[in-house]
Image (cartoon, rainbow, N blue to C red; front, top):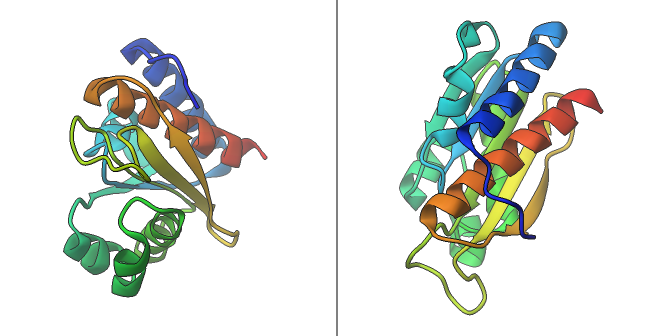
Length: 168
């Protein structure tokens, strides 16, 4: 899926939509990030007053961190790798289980410029979302561009998915 590379202003607009919806629903949000390195949490917490609806952000790049901080099963990582639907689902579920939030988003992918393979080229990203009491779901994306472009597109797609989850 190719998306245009969002600007800072566009990311801020998405964050503002999330803030308004989370406040209305009295809901806290948690993020679990790998390829974005905390960019989703940064975008959300750039908004003044974000502590009213943002609970926590976890950045996990290594397998060990995914296991220890998010409860990702080591067998999942061995079998499917960090960049997989299964890992994204376990990351988002683990984030929600470990914090008092009502909504979680998780991202894992290959931002580049290296690290890609024939099966999982640079730009391959899995994003997972889950509301407390609901089922986790994940979506595969294939973003184009350099590391910055892949990461920006990932942040935007993650935020758009949160908006969808909060308004469905």
